[in-house]
Image (tube, rainbow, N blue to C red; front, side, top):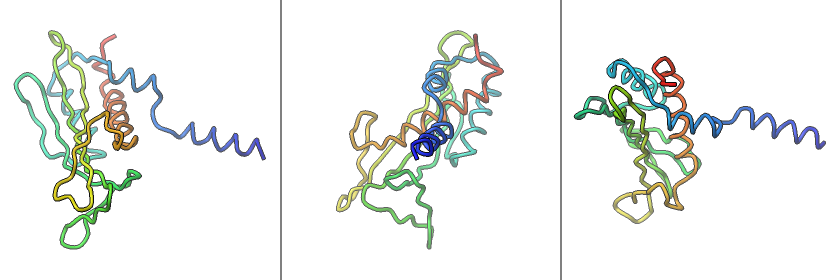
Length: 162
């Protein structure tokens, strides 16, 4: 019985998200190359998981903003139903990702992924913004941020600096 429990734990660990090393590597990676080509990869990668609201150049950086998406407390997407309205419940989370390709040195760029997160509270006319250090911020939000970092980093490997 113990070996079965151990096998289940190992299986879940193997199927889990990115490792700490992968996340740290993705968050600290820098890239060299043609910025428009790199940004297209960023947009295409994000678009596989999120709907894109806006993407373009802002001064010397490139910025992508996803459309706001509602999730339940556990991180499951809440989709629009009749009349295109989303039924949200107490504690539902609205998440929007801001992905930036920013210059750090001449010809070197880094990716910065920032979540813009709000929580629905019953009786409140407006959702409450959640900061990164807010105890009400579900762990899955930062998990989604980390996963996006890692996916973008994988796709930008041809541009990665050593």
